[in-house]
Amino acid sequence: MRFLRRIKSSPDVSTTASLPISESAATDPARGQLVLRPMTDEDLPATSRAHVGLLPFGVFPSLGARFVRRWQRTFLDSGHGVGYVVIDPAAAPDEVVGFLLGTSDQVAHATALTADRRTMASLAGAGCVALFARPRVAARLLRSRFRPWARRLLHRQAEQAEPESFASPQVAVVTALAVHPGWRKSGIGERLVAHFIDHVRTVGATWAELQTSVGPLGAAGFYERLGWRAGSQRLTPDGDILRTYYWNLHGQAEGRIG
Image (cartoon, rainbow, N blue to C red; front, side, top):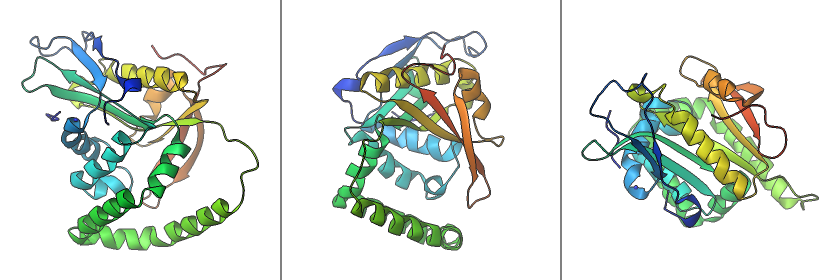
């Protein structure tokens, strides 16, 4: 699979690093060193297709790559968005072989996004277009999610009406992590996660969190090997079981990222 190559390049995610290829993944002798760099808008066509193809969980991937591309762009435009890609410079054009998308402060990111009426209207419009072109997906979402979404929206509005009585910890979230199947077991995923943790720790996050399926398409074993602590799990309306994992960014880590 070739991902084309543009999260907005910002000063706090400007690091570029070379990644050596492990022998187990170096099936192509022409491949040289990989490069980890900040994700940019030019990468979105590639990362959105990869998200749909490799992370087929939840609602957004079912709406297609065009919608996912627009949604991923909200991370690039956010002051709390974090994103990296790993590219193979030997390919022409540069081949994106893995990417990570997340936030350094999930609450601040979500609050700013919901307050941006123009962006929310754009996402809503793109979602309606995607659903119109996918009537089966639309019918499934109406059956499984309309009522829970409505209850959640009302609950959120009630919470916003109440004053905050204490400061919440800054929680970073890994939203998406994908590595091309031909490049797995090469250390790319580990390096992306390590880069993410190093960055969000420096900008004040207390915890990092993520969710992954416990099924065969999920990455529960991957995160457990890295030392992430397993938390609660929940059943989605689609019948998939998602488990939450945590990483303590200050003090006792549950393991090491190598």
